[in-house]
Image 1 (tube, rainbow, N blue to C red):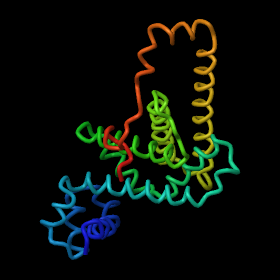
Image 2: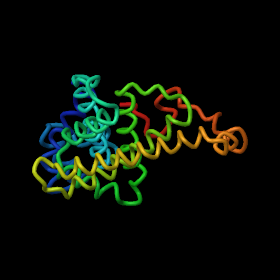
Image 3: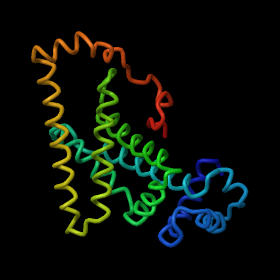
Image 4: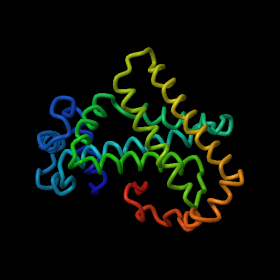
Length: 224
């Protein structure tokens, strides 16, 4: 059995324990036993125990979303609807209780950076799957904006008991509309005389910012 297959087997075994024990050392121990994996090997594959299991679960959700997006008729949608559709697919690939437990874990200061990288990775996966070709500052601003939208939507979704999560989708649409208004305002600023003067003067340095050439160039890049 290969390393990736073994890791997936341990993760599968862990999921039934997370609602009771969280993403914890206890869950890793139970998953190792349930998957007939020596505990030493399980710890070698998931060195930080529960947090690495949680990150593996998040990465699996990103992969499932990418596959679902590839099977979607995106050309029939407006671009903003493609983004919303991607976020909905991402949440459809997640179990709410497992995400709730993960949110609790990543709210701890010691793991906050891991959580932020995971969300950035999801935003990067969405933009990449939607064919983003940005190579300048926009590469970063698009992912930062979507990270904020996705993170806020997840938190809203965790507390939403409306039928078919319709209240969450309405919330998501409002957040995306807010980002679209901001992008329109930026475009208008670049076109007016003052905006042109700023871009030709003190903001000229921003033109030197380039997108990373490899996913590993930026922590949180979609390397999975």
